[in-house]
Image (cartoon, rainbow, N blue to C red; front, side, top):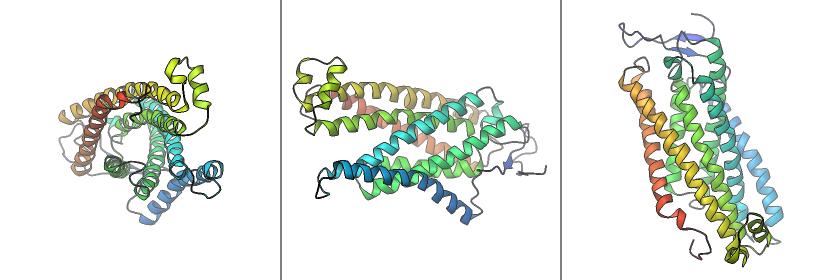
Amino acid sequence: RTGPFKRFAMPSAKSVLPARIRYDGPYSMDLGNPAQFSLCLLRYAMLWEVPRYLSGAFFRRRWGGKDGKANEEFTSCAPSYVMSFIHAFVVGGLGIWVMTGLWASPLHDKFFINDATPPETLKIVDVIERTNWVFFGYMMDDLAHVLARYPKLGKMDMVAHHLVFIVCSILAGYAQIFVFPFSWLLIGELSTPLLTVKWFLRQSGLGTSKRPIAWAKALGFKGKALESTYEAASAIEYKVSEIFVFVFFVVRVCAYGAGLTHLLRHLLLGDMANVPPWPRYTVIGIILAGAALNGHWFKIMITKALGLGGGSKKK
């Protein structure tokens, strides 16, 4: 085979699976070329860092105060929440598109690039590989900010989340494996925008603006929720928390769990025998760790998050 494809050695001569190949597309990740890899990482990290910086300048100018220190926590953290909101919609939407495109594909095309992969599927692979760079660039950029402002933007569970999925992005991207699982992993990000809404509501409740009261009235809240800015913001946040828990359950428990079950089933059936063992089991181990982290977060939500708001002074 010529062109952008390179044949990998088969793990077994008795395998009935199509031969795994290397597809050198326009956005393929190549660890064998450190300079190109570093340049691509810088480019996609800047894709998120530049608008983060610009939004930070906006927040500092609008809410920074004359001495530049007023509302320091808000102005320093708000850009990260804005970027998180945008990133979630971008990659989550692409995840839905990828899942739709690969839904009816042959089983082996869902797990690795092979010599039977049709051209129309390779076009989807191009989108997947570019999306992986977008995701990878965001994770690296956001991790730097999480560490720089630790623990304001997240604690060790968030650091662990970013680290394991950075490794997963590199391994799966370079080995060009688990293309279909990538879709449901991305769809899990669709729960994130509600966290951003919750954070901004919480911040608005700490201010003096009467806008949260107007929002609460427009949403049909009555009684105590309209007594103060804090009560109005807390009441709305409580309802957003309920929606968030439901969305999280759908995308990070149900969808993630169904995808993981599908993945493990075909692993046990030997449908990934042509994928080298070390990236295969490393990535699956990371995905299992992600499932455990999702379970940990969901437990916290059930036991604590639904007790927020509704007029209580305890946050």
